[in-house]
Length: 513
Image (cartoon, rainbow, N blue to C red; front, side, top):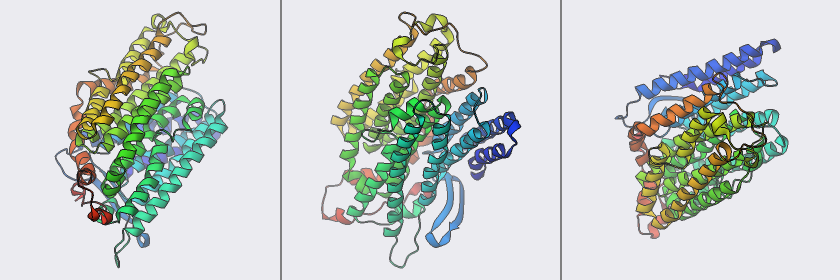
């Protein structure tokens, strides 16, 4: 299999849609929708063909790109990114389907940006060269700038400006860190290289690792978003159209967490160990802050938005517990959260359509009797949000908490409060919309089998499948995830001493040999 095929199918279909004449909006819609389905089918074939017993990357694509600078067009898939690629393909497909069933201004431009966005996200997940990762990471900003700024609602210009400023500053800091990492790790007389496997084998002084770590962390925490880097989130979530919001919250937020596991921990293990406490504090504060804010919101979108900050806090906690169980919990929780927020935002859009576009909890209520199918699907997603036993989120959170209790029991105890708070805001959201008195804006009407179910049903079905058999993900991610945190975990268990002032940039990555 060639990874370039699923990577560039969405962009190619978007370009073709953009080049169509104005009167062919319907064909543009079908082209991009077909491109997302083709990518999804290809990724499903990868899931079937993936060899969970094999060590290292599979379906590797490697070509010299800018040889003088040591930059390669290098792609690969392993247990760490396999399911993130899969959930990306799934959510872009259902979002393209949701979009195709509705009318948009300037549809050719809209579908082009949707295709470009999928290629950029898939590229960030597949890249095995740091420079290539930075290119795709920065490219993601372009389509979302237009998707929010052109097709958003309300104060969309202000929201887009804030989103771009936050994200662009983080991206520039990461660019500086990536260049510094490639240059400073190059041995005397050696060839500069940005391939992740090469960077992991090279050495950096401990102080250098620390400040490069901080540059990457700033970019990844803004993308998440995590407290206190979340200032762009409220305005942006209010202004963003539903399918774009699903992608923004469900997919883009995971690229930062993935970057910690793919790049930061294996290449900068000394700094990861030194700054472990700082990252755990950020994680725990994000859990508590996001949960409390979610409970206090009247806007249904912001309830989900702040709950996402809490969930990304759990994911960060799992990563920086530097424990195999915690890291594996973080990986499956990234997949779970992407599915859950997709379901929640689609449900909120349906509720708004039945309530004169109102998303205020004060003006909703009594929908359960008027929309029983909607209420049933919403209940499944809401129970997954609060990590009810039997849901895939329960598996992810319990692994994260086990990892935290094994390594940092105090942080695990504090984070446990977030589990209780999640039950509060999830039940409150469900009760305010589905039960109580009928709201003044509520009109009768259940899910539309033609407009709504094609997007919501696949997400709920995958959630139920993972609830029944989470081992499908856990078995395929365990080896790679454990390898990625091994060097940083070893550093965290060392007694501090003079030898840590010039630590290795990372032991060789056995998974990539």
